[in-house]
Image (cartoon, rainbow over all chains, first blue to last red; front, side, top):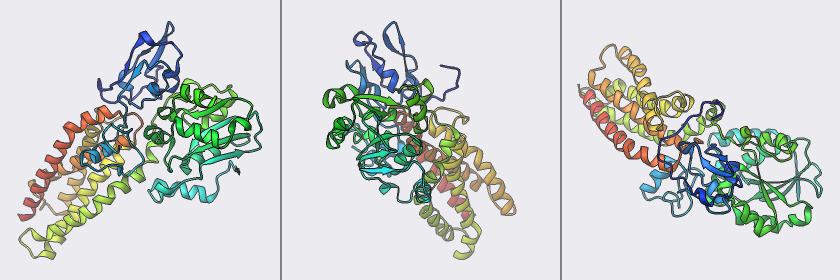
Length: 105
Length: 331
């Protein structure tokens, strides 16, 4: 994409799904994604770089027709460790996941 | 309603440095509410931000010469991106604040400029329905706001893309180091004292012989994980942060061993060498993995995947490394 070399995280793990038949082509997912995961062709959005998805859920939140699904969370090992140790809300930083997603909830 | 300056003062600069070192970071806030930059009127743009003072200062410093309304949401002193993930920077909070401060009576237009990184907490269509205001997503970086406004409130591709360049990684180093130091410092003191109980000589002599090296070795791992790994992040091999950190540790360990063997006048034995080849990469791997939280492109699914493999390996390496180290002291 665009010639700039991008650094990607792990391959094939992101939980992002787009149901294209519901897409109305509004372009909100392209507008909010900070990682250029989406592109638009013939009035429909599609996923061009699934491995770049950081599961922030901005696209899902802003899709007016609920065509996008992603298990959202923050990619933070510290928070994951704290949740595994059974400590909640004390990740030592501001990062936290949405309720029901494990760490910090 | 307060009018704010777009020039940062000495207190703001020192405050920013302090929070980068973790001092007062969790209570570095501004009062939520409505602020004016310059002399805004009923046509002026309305910008939304969080009440973390560092975010607020970045925003106002980018608005020199502009006339703008700023709506500050109560995110409990947390930045926009993290607060959006948490939900405190969210649709409900935004609509409530717009209502409380009667923004609809303040301006004739019906547009709210929300930072793009706030989007994980905001549903633009829901805000429109609830408040009557359309959400316009602004650039990722506050410094792009003047261009964004000049562009007729349109972001370019570059403005929407979150990158993680060296300068942005470097400002995070002090905090990474301070956070790691909080457990590394007591741990190294324990190791320092522990070195006295092993070995043939009396306590003080053992400590003198091994204690300092134990401390230096552990801190080599901390430096490899919290400084070397973030700085060289894109060029370190692998995608997993634990792997990148481990590699940084493997590259750092021989440097430490050169000092160890030459410093001990050739008395450093093979067990000590082996132990540090396990301990330094393990510590660096763990701390490199911790940097996932500060980075801008890791996913929760990915972090969980790498942890499933990395954490048991790190644990095993630390246990074996410590046993070897203690064994080496006995000789």
